[in-house]
Amino acid sequence: MIQRIQTIFLILAAATFIVLFYLPFATTDVAAGEMLNDQAYTVEDHLLLGGLCLLGGILSLVAIFLYKNRPLQMRLGYIIIIAAIFIILVAIGLFINESQGYGNNVNISTGFGIGIPLLTIILVAVANRFIKKDEKTVRSMDRLR
Image 1 (tube, rainbow, N blue to C red):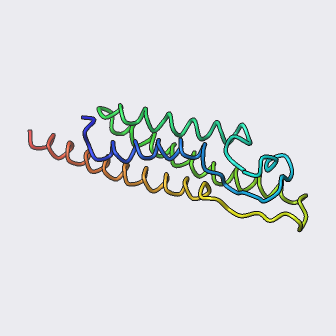
Image 2: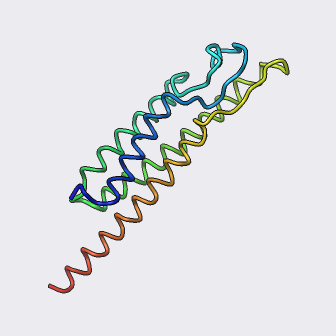
Image 3: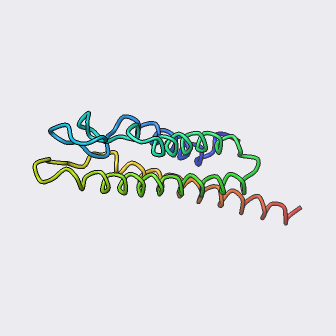
């Protein structure tokens, strides 16, 4: 059944991956380096970040339609959480590596994009909680038969 509460959380998780393409991780007042040449550091600045974001969004949408196979749906949820964690780690690692050559004359401010993967992790964790609750209910009904 698609009309379960975890479907809402998985749709919101997919939406957060889409939002990452529009919200920057960091911004600056002047163009600096390769990643901040457009004054915004987004997932489009590196192929790995874009790929992880696309993978997480697609897996979130696929997980919605796996309602008949709840264990697989939960495993996909864990993979989505790992992808979100990798987005955070790769974004921070690439930014630190790139920003070492900027010097002190560049004013860098963080954007809302860096917090979006954390929101994704929370949404998928809540969805997995409800999936687990459904699985527990189904197993208890099987015992009654």
